[in-house]
Length: 280
Length: 250
Image 1 (cartoon, rainbow over the protein chains, first blue to last red):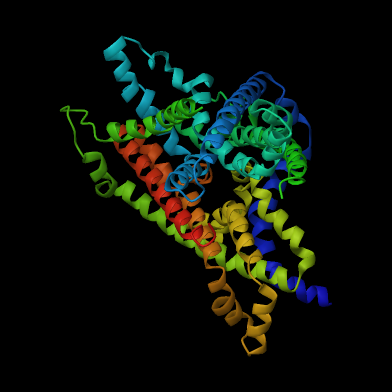
Image 2: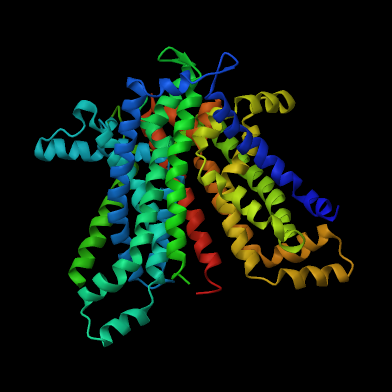
């Protein structure tokens, strides 16, 4: 009875989260196994036909390559930022910009690249006039290669945000201890810093992968025709109802996305727990 | 070591600032007569559909912040004071939107939305409910950090023993003490709502990002101008926030 009274004020919160997060997710999972009101594996089987498999492959390639590039370059940028004073205006400005690009860019980033290397983009025109090189011809920007470039524009900043705390957690005493025992800078990085940072780096890499895999806005604004990757295939399944001759395929594709992201995020949480052991 | 660092800074600056410069250039270009024009920027207010979308997005941001604070602040305070056993559950639910992409939520939202539009009518403002869920992870982290930094138990007991009810305790005593956390939760939520495209476009509501994409099909410079404006607005918001919240504990 006392527990019930304690739980009552939590009701509005739990209700909102249930109605607008848990029920939609449940709807997706249930409907992925239902055709014409009965249990069926048809929609799941449809995921393993040509077009969805090709989209999945391209999505994985796009997510993996943008995550690898983003993690490597983001770690370097985080290291650069660390060398500036924590309260300096430069660091605050860089981190604010990183956070805008990483989390809230979406549609705006698509237009940033259209203005840069689109058909009439600034860089496109420069290269045309100065060197006679055509970068925009053939719609390269709308291919998977172009998407990788656009995605790194928000993956590097995201890496900075998630990796900087781990870099900051490296204590100067550890470096001093290593140096006083006769280690060179190179030895300190190889024997002390890198092994400590590896779990955090791999964890961030996974987070970046999940982030790219689930990203929708940038690709949707950039690619208006065709569905090269899974999120865009979900779009056409939602807007045209019948894709590849199957109604309800959106549910199965969304379930596929839940499974991929959930597996990656579980692995991420395991790695974060490893990092948390020394990051205190 | 020094020259390498400077070179790397320059390379990163070029990669990140050039597209922003290109946007500014592109958005002031006069496609017909050549030269420069600010007509794309005038369109932000002159174009009826675009202006309506800007107003809708700003209203959504305000509503989402209000609803998020009304929902989350009392819940988190209550959990800490009276129901610590629910702590893990609330944290799990708040961080769950990080694992369940917005795209998945939209796909499963149809049935729920039939009820929402039946009860509240078909307005873009009904997106508030979904947006409250989408901003939960960011808001939770900001509020959690602020609540951990104060002695909540003592504050609440002092207020209650002086005769304050729960509403007065929360609004007049606790919230002023976690102002920095409330502000950062609010600012980040505003930035998320102004940039949100996935849910709005697939539910068919005309918010700012949806309208930007729509206009982009015919009028590139106006779309680029609006995009740059949202990026700058977001940057200023977060930059001011970093100045306000980190001044106290450098």
